[in-house]
Amino acid sequence: MHDVAPATWTRCASLLKAMSEVAPVPFTLLVVPNYHRQGDRVPDWYEQALREHLARGDELALHGYAHQDEAPLPRTPRQWWRRRIMTAAEGEFSALDTSAARNRLSAGLGWCRQHGWPVEGFVAPAWLLSPGTWQALENLPLSYTTTATGFHLLHPRRSVDMPAIAYSTRSRARLGLSLAWHGLRPLPRAPGVRIALHPDDAGQPAVIRQLQGLLESLLRSRMALTKRAFAAALLGRRPPQAAAGAPAGDKAPYAGSTSASESVASVAPRAEPASTSLG
Image (spheres, rainbow, N blue to C red):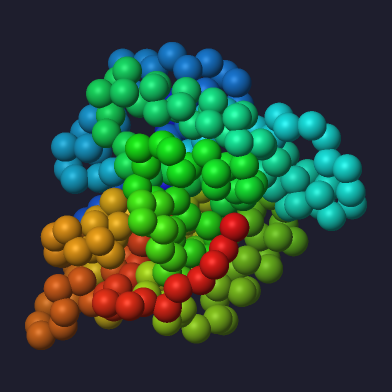
């Protein structure tokens, strides 16, 4: 679940409930400490909600600090398109140097520690990581990050294909194209698949119905995992626990995964999964 913050929580909770109606899958909640610079105070009701999710086995991951692109203005048409049009100026880490990226990541991790929330992963807003951000991640206590098409272990560096299923709802045209695209395309056959939920999806009944159908289809051959569990499986730490609704039988323990939050639906990571060099 992207963009988790007090200001978005009502919509986030609605989406999480809708996906849980399909099966009690685990979620990775991507929290934003100071969403759109509205302040980093944590209301009691919000803290309680996140603690309840942690208690049920869900994961919290860091999703930037402010979820706004506050770097110097784009200089080229391509940069403008990428940072202003495609991402609505929310690609916070798309153009940061190493120092600026490290400062924001450290501030976000400190905020999580202050509230006693364990965090192992980082997902950049809009999945955009500048070269400086990749460099900053080298020396921080985070085990993974993701891009739009991949899952990346950080220590040691290792990447596997993991496309994200996401919807664009900012305009009627984008919504229609998203529904058509996901309604017609075959399900990805990569080692992992993520269902990337966004708060604005909650206001689109057609998107919710399609997301529920996609999750149901993925769970026929995959197991639902949090990102943290997927990272642990790649590192060989422990086999992840199957979520209710995952297929039983003689399949490998994590053959087929879906995690909603971003929900990771993934085929079992192989000993040497196909890797990509992204970012």
